[in-house]
Image 1 (cartoon, one colour):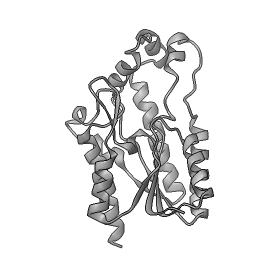
Image 2: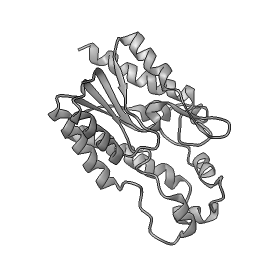
Image 3: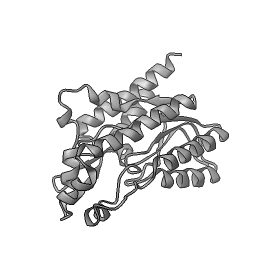
Image 4: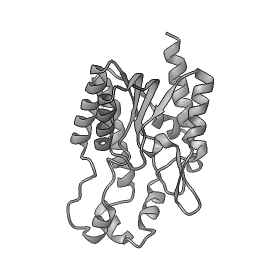
Amino acid sequence: MIASNVIVYGDSIMKATVPDDDLRPKFNIGRFIERIKTEYSIGVINRARYGATINKGIKDLSNDLSKGIKSEHALLEYGGNDCDFDWKAVSEAPSEVHLPKTVLTQFLSTLKSMVKLLRQAGIDPVLMTLPPIDAERYLGFIVRGGLKRENILKWLGDVQTIYRFHELYSNAIARFADKEDLEVIDIRSRFLDKHDFKDLISDDGIHPTIKGYELVYDSIAEYIRTRRAY
């Protein structure tokens, strides 16, 4: 049996992933987990996986619960990969219908199932909104290997469709949290009023920079302080 104060389920955001100069992922979560442990005396188990969708998340959660994992809280952070598309398929057939990796209705249904499993296990679920992306940079990242930019743009209509679809999932998470009476850490708002937004998002357009992850950390730390105040 493993016990902790908080267990994290999520994708590369919760691994503090920042691409290097060759756009290969580098994980920086260790430094932030150590700060949480040191500053707030909180034990953390991180089950986040690079590239994970919520379907992977519920499998990991179910497996952990079957092994008797214990925690006071669980932080759930999914959506960034769920709202993404098979860009190779889009590039090859821009006139066809293409669905995201996890359609929104399925995403919310699976999120509801995860929340139910956690509550049944006596673990308090906490949700997170998604840090925003830079659609122009992300499109450049998508086509770097030879995919047809013009075909992808034809299917999108305009490049900001990528941003809007990502925002659709983030907003749905916030509404779901309100409907289910769940606490939510609003990461997204920390980014949106910043005049140096371009410095907060990495060259791949989808992962924060270390400076951006400081905002993520600040949001989580503020949540911890606020919760301890009452």
